[in-house]
Amino acid sequence: MGASQEHIESQPHRLQDRLTGIPGLETVHDRIAAWRTEPAAAPGHAHVHAMLLALRRLEAINIAYGPAAGDGALEEMASRVHHFAAEELDGPWQLARAGGGTFLLVANETCSRERWQLVADQLADLIARPIALPSGVLRLSPRVALIRALTEESVESMLDRLSHALQQVSEHHGARVAWADGESTPPGHSSAQLEADLLSAIDRDEIEVLFQPQFSLADDHLTGAEALARWNHSQLGRIGAGALFAIAERADHVGPLSRHIAAKALWAAREWPDELRLSINVTAADLAFGSYVRQMLDLVRESGFAPRRLTLEITEQALISDVALAAQMMAELGAQGIRIALDDFGAGFCNFRYLKVLPIHYLKLDRSMIEGVTSDKRDVAVLRAIVAMAKALDIRVIAEGVENEGQRVVVAREGCAYYQGFLRAQPMHREKFARMAARRSEGLV
Image (cartoon, helix red, strand yellow):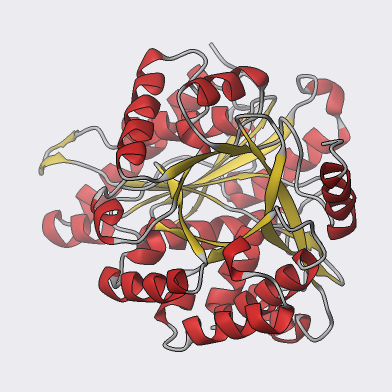
């Protein structure tokens, strides 16, 4: 039995939702403030986690079965979430209604990101079970946004980031759970302001490129690096790549941002030893831009970086809109010596058709395909099958997210060619990677 929520009856009456009996968002402010001012009351190393839960089909239920059925669905959802939290969560928690068919669950937990994701999946399964009402049997369709709050992050900032994540998951058919990435938005700095800030961030040189080293599994030697973007915002501090591109997409600024990142990465990599490769990520917006190939080739030529040393990483999600066009663009880039990697393989639908119709040189496994290989025979079997298929197609496999020696041993044994992950190195500034590259050329790495 986990820790229980403070009795709802002890909350001021004005905070109660009349339908569900669940407090309003004011209670969340009070609880989080108490957790931060009274750390002794929470488990050691506890951290504020939150999830925003919403029902997809609430309006449809109201229209088809009447408002009473919709109210019944909300009451049942509140009851299921409340009892689940009481049973499953170890630390103190608080449930609040955020309006409509949306609820906010916050907890002061010691759990990892993976554990919070598991909690969300289990809760979503519970909410999705049929509900028997006088009007008939209903099935709820939940969607969930997750967050691990930053130190001293305000509730307003958490809700802002959770709302954006919830909107993203609702726009993807079949998606149910999404993480809110990026840094917090302090009071007075809205999402609209962030979008406006991004438009001039390039001119202010606030966009930084870090490099995630990549290694050969045959001899553990450094082979190159993947370029990763960070936004060093003048007020908010560092904003990660996921949040950066989400903001850029809302501001319709993905193309200029991608070109700026590619140019900075190429100019930095031109100083590396000749045997090291550079990987740059390609977005769906890039592939939709008619002159992307020409612009990329221009950037490569202007930087002086050899095309044969460049790999462009493209996700399955970026290919969905027009596979034929993507194949044509890849072929044009490949004709100039540029290599193509299918990124995040295993994170989406794993459409094997892409391996047949696209000129791919590398298959980059998502970290979710690596996490269980040291303990789960089924995970190893899936990895072995993917590597065998890639080998038959003359495609080399890169393992991403290798975080311990056991994982490195397994992916090497199963035939992966390269790997990257926190086991050997985290993303680093260009100067630090240049020193690593210099040591590699001297036989020290």
